[in-house]
Length: 159
Image (cartoon, rainbow, N blue to C red; front, side, top):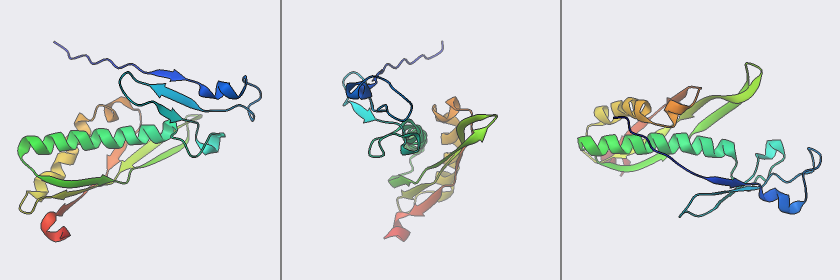
């Protein structure tokens, strides 16, 4: 039997509080996203699209979704095989450009930097990034490449 997981969110254009939609250059792009039982997320368009640069935008959130999905998939795999991860950090980068006459993400590159406990299998820890990429639900849902350029550091070397 297939597993099905459902999610719900309510998105509200909060920019309407500043007045009705007028010309392209004059309307507020602020929004909120509400998910039951969680803090409200306040966002806007990217500053390049006349949004509020101080707020999260959909492009930021897509990048964070890909980065955190890879991280959580990777940590689960490490936990299952007994690789003790001491720290994990990712400096993800996404590129948007016009492709097929549409503005879209063309690539995301994750740069996970993983510190493992002294004596842990660094080669296996590195290989698990490939499996994490296969298992990441969000990466499996996008139509552009999501690559990773990982590094593994032993806690003994990091100290």
